[in-house]
Length: 113
Image 1: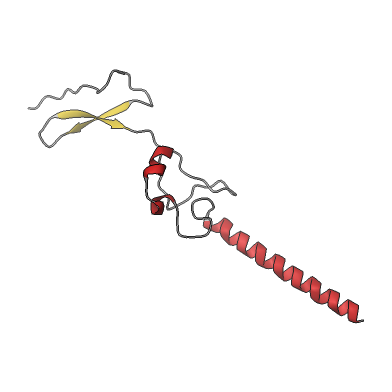
Image 2 (image 1 turned 30 degrees about the vertical axis):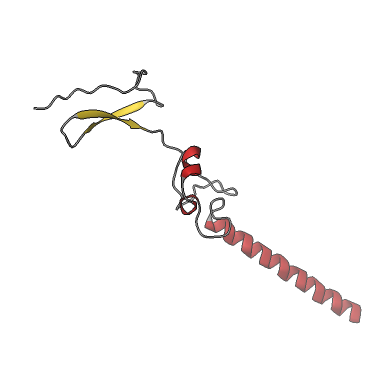
């Protein structure tokens, strides 16, 4: 039976949140420690503060190294606002334009009278 003991890499020996390891068996049958990275909360919507689907949860340094398609989704306000908030913005802008047009028509009618 292979040895079931393994040693932490580096000088810091405590299993803190920053410095956690798990045991992994290598193809050669050895047991080694593999560093477990801290998970992030991930990007959130600017408006409603919900988590953005379709975007990986990475550290800021990993975001810098990743390609653009992993940082955004192909939509207006892709990596910053969720789809519901984008839809609300579009509808609000459309309704404002409609309201302006109605006001203009009413002003024209009242000036003709």
